[in-house]
Length: 282
Ligand SMILES: Nc1ncnc2c1ncn2[C@@H]1O[C@H](COP(=O)(O)OP(=O)(O)OP(=O)(O)O)[C@@H](O)[C@H]1O
Image 1: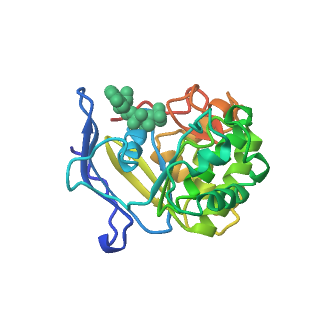
Image 2 (image 1 turned 60 degrees about the vertical axis):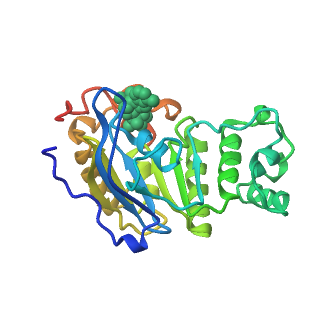
């Protein structure tokens, strides 16, 4: 590839995840094309990029749901994933869903503790289909947490939630991250979500990490903070979004579907209006 943007470089010995020159394709060109990446223990990283650029493909590989060529990916044994939809087993009560596959003798106590952490103790015996969207995602988070993962992969976990629930869930994930310090990789279409939560933003393009942007903002973070605004401009520009055309336009969609109005990028839970996104240059 002619693209020679900096691939993330960090000392391998300290990394919880190491990816080197990963190539993945589906018969019609490569989706991942020599992608390299390091994630440090306890780090919080957001992964952004246009729709179809390969974010979920990368995540599935890191979740060991898709195979990787030998020697390209090093992962911890203890990993967990939360997807956009909660993927709970409908015929098992919530607690059973959370402890499913746990081999600890005190699995039930661990499951109850995880449910307490996500504020769902009172629903431990409920059937998944009786949960609200936010409750179901909290159960999915508890199921991930109970495994005490060193790596937590979040694939747009808030995308299907309403705006208020999304805000609460963002706060909950930040709290859980502080308490347990897993390395988190959060796939998101939402630039503001990345800036509110992560300490580093990776932008994918051409099958690689095209930009690696530190987010050194103090917490709790605020949208109006000058540092936030500057980083937002930088991220939008890396994503090929025309901020001036964006300014002053009304949001097109609610947070329940931030993907429909634009090719895969949103701000503050809203998809971008048509015309705000430059034509792809690659
Ligand atoms: N199992 C598969 N078989 C064939 N093509 C696939 C498969 N999985 C992914 N792709 C293709 O690979 C490309 C990248 O898909 P992927 O889901 O990783 O993108 P994404 O960046 O996560 O997209 P989005 O932001 O819309 O979720 C797409 O063109 C998709 O159609």
